Figure (tube, rainbow, N blue to C red):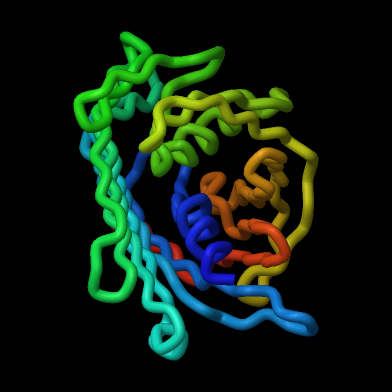
Length: 232
């Protein structure tokens, strides 16, 4: 379960809204057990948008009850600009901590116009069709693209991570009604088979993912929205 939790946090703690306006969002993370789901952590996300620049951050951690068994936290930062309504990532940073030790620290500089990224001095090139994005702003771009191209069924991206740039495809399955905080919401369901990841994007929340499901081996997790705030 520990390995599955790390993969889950790494792949789903990247939540967003398609509209580039500042907001804060909170999520609860649950692990699916034999007969029920148990809350094991939470995450906080913040998007700061200022004209044609943005800074997007996330902080996630295991809840105190679970820290006696496994203490884990993760923080991310993505920054970039907006050109012709396109989000252009230029920097991505990740710090992952296990217990009191920093397990992973990554910084990536992304040059979208030239289709490559630099990680630790090494250059990695784009390998196929799709926009170059980082692991955090991926969902900002996905939500924006779905809003602008509602009839498109497949969205392809080139994701820059610590191993280089690799392609990922997100498929629109259809609509689904989900219940969040006692409210039934009409959502767009999206699937990424390679990551074994599904997202439910709510139009009412500006295409913010309100429910995320992730499977790692025999472990299943889901992340649900509990609070969403925009500046007055």
